[in-house]
Every structure is written in C-alpha cells, then in structure tokens.
Length: 268
Image (cartoon, rainbow, N blue to C red):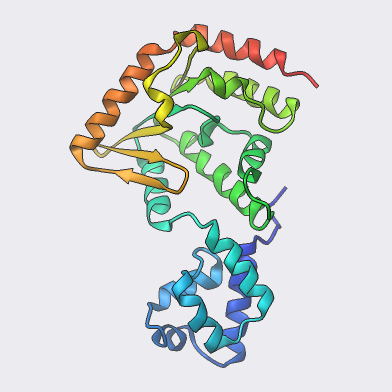
C-alpha cells in the first residue's frame, strides 16, 4: 500500500538535496560549513536521518529552505526517535537468537498487523506526516521473525493488551487472529497474564530481553524515549522482572484459548 508513497522524511531530504544543488554545493562542501560528516549530509538527503534542531538555522541560512520545509522539519524533529538506539536495537533484533518480550498496553511491534500498527502509530500525532513511513519501518522490522534462522520469540502480554480497543473492531479481531496464527510456529510462544492476577510488577511498562552472541541486552521504553540497556547488573534485574511476569501468565495453550475467545468477541 505504501510502497510508492514518499514519506515526509524523504520529501524533506529531497528538498535539501535540490536546495544544495541549486547553490552548486557538493555534499562535502555543505558538510564543512557546519562542520559535520559528508555521510551525515547524505543521510539527511535520503531521509534516513532528520537534521538536529541545532543544525536547522545554519542549514536554512546556507540553503535558503522555504518556510513549508521548516514547518515539516519542526514537526518531524518534535516526534523523532533517537536514531542511536533505534538503529542499534534494530540490529539486535536482526541478530538475536532469543527475544523475550513483555507488553502491558499494546501488541508488540514485531507481531502487529499493518492496520493495527497504523492505528497505534497514529495515536497522539495530530499531523499525519510520515505516518506511512513509520508503518513501513515497523513492518520491515518483522522480518527478524521470518529470517532463515529465526530467534525464539517469547511474548508475555497483560490481558489489557487483547481487551483494549485499538482501531476498529475488525482491526482488533484481525490482530488477535494474527497472534493465534503466529503461535503455531515452533519458535513463537505467546502467554497472557489474566486480569484475575491483579496488580503485578509489569505495571511499570514494557521490557525486552535479547540474547545475541552469547550476551544479553535489554530494551526499556517510556513516554519520551527508548533505551538499550547493556550493563550486566541492569540486564540481570530486567531478566528477573521478565521471569516474574512469565510466572504470572497462563500456560501457552490456555493463553491462546483466551486470545481466540477475545478475537471472536471483537465483531463489527
């Protein structure tokens, strides 16, 4: 659906490149005026990265970017995910042998359908800028589960995840059916912590543990940003938390039965 769609990032990148070329500057020459690396300028022009706030006034002065581009840049920068941890965690997902996931509010990104992902990414964003690009990026990350040697993926979900409406009833039903289908894979385990458990340690938010090259790293999320955690003592604490949550969950078969029942309850 979005294969031929130019995202806001790509649009801004193209306009930066056109403005640079109109000034008859090479990437290397523009980079030296900051100074930044030529590869960083290339990343701006392809839309891979967004210029940081402190670079925008200089970029505007040198290239004379129009107001509409500045408004789009301001919108993108205000919602930008730090590329340092995003790129790093994406590499971890692609190389991990085990992924242990806990989610308290939404279906984990690697398990989301396209419509569910779009509904989640639209939340809290008054502007639709770059929405389709974000959806495409999220779906591309799911290739980590379909590679030739996929990781063992074990997700523990609070029951609120399968009960809270995200998008339309059909979106929810299709998403839960997708979970059931994924659970049929040998390398995918999905468990649910039922409401009857009551309060538990997972109320603090989502966590992910990844085993890679014989070591473990973790990822924690909050309202502002995500963070890759590598300190052994912190990773160990997150592993203990995940084990506590897993122990609260229903057996895999009972979990899938609960998800299937919930899917049938989401009717249009």
